[in-house]
Image (cartoon, rainbow, N blue to C red):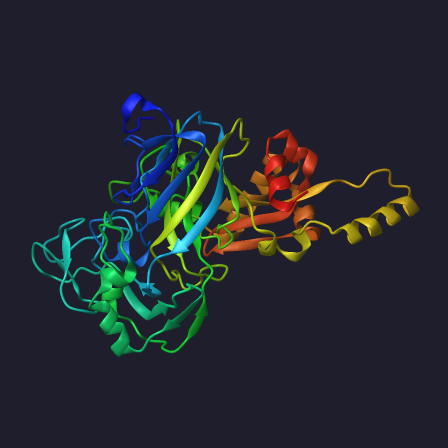
Length: 440
């Protein structure tokens, strides 16, 4: 895997990322770096979803950072990503439930937007005015809108970035007049700000902020639109009519499930991502100010922000998808570590019934993705079984009595969260992260 050369090609202890892809993750493109094993990556991320969705020249539905090469990471390994910090820099954003007008794309509005008048695919566009017809084709000046907002809102945040408030029309239009400023678009970003649409269908609503990354992971092993690096969105690539079409087998083999939209992927969590190309290619983006499980509107409050990650190689990682060690407070109640008082009660039961040893366990959350929710659950269960060398039936039991199935995104991202045998985690090199995260 190539990377951009620097003096002596010495791995950097700390790497600052300022540049973005054109919304396509391509292992043939040079990576940034290298960063040393155990090093730090700092990035200023751009909003995902709505901004890129109304910017036809972007080809993946999001705008993520360029991948970073990590020293020593080889296919078959994993990369442990400690999320040290996530800070929202946007002052305001806009979002809402979408529809896709007919004629504005070639098969997929996220990947292949087109101007229906001059028939240009991925046309260059500019913003003229305010509202849902404000993005115009540079060639024919026709409005180009691969997506429309059916019901939307503009929201601004307080200075502490803890609370947001949705705005009425006059305030939304005022913010649209300085859209790039209020969205804090990074200098290298190429997207149109969604604040130009100035939606205001639900004013005066107070919201809590709880920022996380919708995209965090490693580069797929073939060229793939960034938002489609997951089993559900990846299904849209199967036999598609545009240049990024893949077969179902290719999607399954190459994706790394970096697009998760799991709200527990936030500051303090530890994510283990699969490595499918040399150097791994860590990328990030699609920061959300907050989101309920399922992202049921299709989109949430996409924001600019700053991110700090610390990364290290996990050799011989046994599965092809991500594993998460969430914050303690983000675990479902049944998947939380047992307290000393609970362990004491358990020891008394063991003595009463002649049980020689109580299994040591630790929380883990295994991600599953597929075109639909049932298949995503099966994928998560299968991965968890392969990870721990247990049967799927046993994982089902453990997730039922010591965990939960949680929804990341509708239609097909879940995580199987449960208390796993600590000895099995130790055997695959993940026990150290469970012990660190939960003070075991």
